[in-house]
Length: 444
Image 1 (cartoon, rainbow, N blue to C red):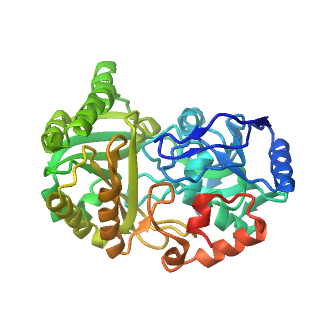
Image 2 (cartoon, rainbow, N blue to C red; image 1 turned 90 degrees about the vertical axis):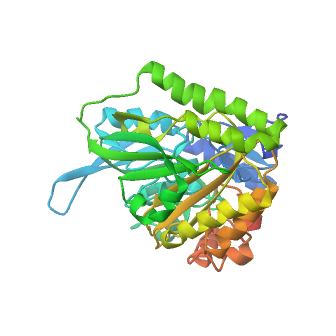
């Protein structure tokens, strides 16, 4: 471990911490040594991945552990369906592996993660521990694909967890927001490699809200981005094809223009203009919506799911029942138009299937995820406050890695297994070695 004199900040720049030390362990034994030494000193420990959480989930004034040297695939066990046919594999992966590294590794083995979010820089453990999800009415979030994990507890013990071994620890740790222990490796269920046929085109929010349920089922993975102050949306529909389907990826020029220039360089310039002259934001959004032309391509699943995100922003995301989603979006539109709040960032609308993960935002119900964003040089306070009121009125649940104001007192009534989770946390970390300002707010 090295003594730290350099502050740490997350990707968005809204969380800054001053850890007392930093550690980059290369083995599980080294992780346990760091944890036990910190516990003996009465210091705290937090693990950090890519820092893409918008909450202080990884912030600490104690020891900051990076698992960037614990990466790669450890083992693969083929799995079979009830008829005896191979339906994928349970793949054990070291926790520090970044998603952009894991996709190609799995593809070379004829495998893929069944669903992914849109940011590939995250570490596997960080993505799972905060509840990262993609979109798809029949697709669960990443924590629900975890079938086993290895956890270093506060006393330095190493626990191997699954439904059959340490089942309560498993249920808590597969979406543990860093409060239960440090995940050093996890086993995820992967499916045979597949290709995605991607279709993107302009549409309108009015049309989407007229049959949001139908839209959610219009493709294996459907989502759209709505540009506030307009009726314009950009639709993204991804349809699964077999892994040996012909690839028709974006040409390098189209990729540079669409993903690099329009979505990052030009969009960043528009956001900076909006920050300097907020009154121009509606015109900027109309221009941005028109610039997003239709396109279609076919590529490996992990290449389609994720795209480069270099324009920094703040984000709040809530999961609301699918039946309530159209009303939520209508209320959000009316609130923005009525209040005079401006934002150049689109509102992202995605879907997920119900799962059984204790702390999941999709626990036992199909959900629609609605994410509001604000450019990092613009004040997000009023937009997020007003949006959160709408989300809460619809029985929304906050994404653990996105900004929100919820506390333990009201979350305990929202999350069915909240008390079960807290009981496991209390047993494994009675002295709060893994606590920080965020866990102290959302957990008792």
